[in-house]
Image 1 (cartoon, one colour):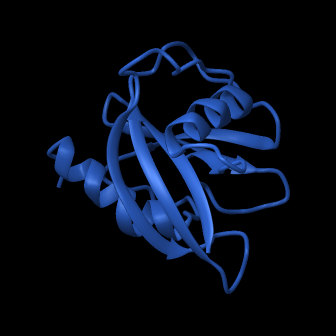
Image 2 (cartoon, rainbow, N blue to C red):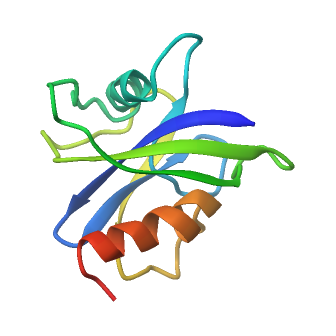
Length: 133
């Protein structure tokens, strides 16, 4: 079981997705927890490392849910993901292992290869929250 934290940034009916170097699937900003690190702290750290945004202010992250799904980049492994939402504090930029940023419509974008967690759990939750069919 791989334990991760992720952040969904939604703006104008679109969610920010990232693709890591050497991979094909788009996913949320986020990553694995360090030993002893909380999901909240991991989400803050990964957001800073991957897209250069600071979401560490108290109350900046709001829980969306905790989900289980197959890992996108580690075949045969399962992901346990705590997902938060946050307002976009500035324009994101690709950093660390991120090869590409892409804004995706909440109502779907058939052109992107999505991570299972995003496709099957997070997008439906975001659609319900933002009342998108």
